[in-house]
Length: 335
Ligand SMILES: *[C@@H]1O[C@H](CO)[C@@H](O)[C@H](O)[C@H]1NC(C)=O
Ligand SMILES: *[C@@H]1O[C@H](CO)[C@@H](O)[C@H](O)[C@H]1NC(C)=O
Ligand SMILES: *[C@@H]1O[C@H](CO)[C@@H](O)[C@H](O)[C@H]1NC(C)=O
Image 1 (cartoon, rainbow, N blue to C red):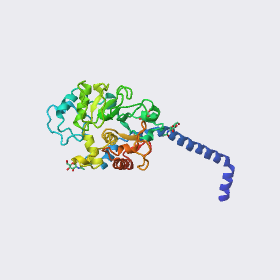
Image 2: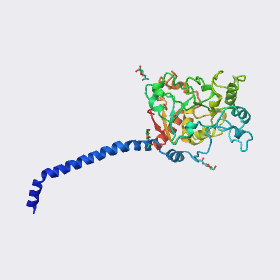
Image 3: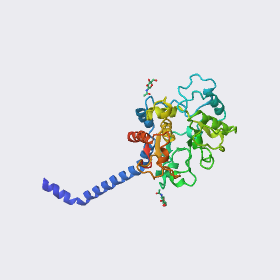
Image 4: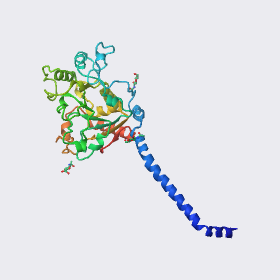
């Protein structure tokens, strides 16, 4: 028997090798096909993980909900049914009158182009020096929503930071940017209110009233050429969540040890309540030992200048690291 089998195999060795070769070609072809056909689909799945941000954010943020509007609306200030628990920056208690005037000239809706997105892929662009020479511009521009902070320039830095700006978060002292040249025509200018004076400044600018000069820690711009239809007032709820849930700060602080979240961490919190995917770039400060390292990609200030601020940079870094570890956010630059 075995002899017969060997004879048979010897006779048809060519055929067997042929069949084997054909089989290998088929396997190779099907793997190759699967690769080229399925890879893009897989990529789309990973670029829109619907529901994942909500699920992971709920692990980190107690009582996480997406029920709160992003921006303040006039109708909520005609007659205040349930007054805010807190004063600024965590609530609007005591600022109702000026809000009534301000909200009557600004808007609160999201642009249609964002409303109709099936997947909101967001990039929050910090102002950190790590963006310098990063060549991240093109990547940043591919996100549906690009959130920028304060006076971060775009003009002249497009290669590293991109040119798309869906929203820019700012407060009066950080509004030293040209609203037209550093933004796109449809950029939303989102005021982050820290104190009642901030509403007054915004109202004076938009209604061209007499400017108030006192009560700011740095002189805000006196002329600011923005279209009121693009101005939004951020709901202080997000500042409250950032402070209370991410930094565990007490909501009622004794006057001397005031500590407030940075606009950067606030912007990440906002994105966690609004986006289906949150990537960050340009976050992180240099090592505290590195006193000479500049902290921003566009200006020569160092960590020393942060010492007097009301922000706790290392405390915030811990919060961001936890989000990175959870896979809640992803970093495009190193942290
Ligand atoms: C996958 O993503 C690409 C590029 O982003 C897009 O052109 C394509 O239509 C997407 N496919 C599906 C099935 O969503
Ligand atoms: C969640 O909400 C409940 C009811 O308002 C409150 O008692 C509780 O302290 C909240 N938890 C957190 C973590 O904020
Ligand atoms: C960025 O690149 C330029 C030109 O290649 C170089 O001169 C400069 O030192 C770089 N800056 C940093 C911060 O790496």
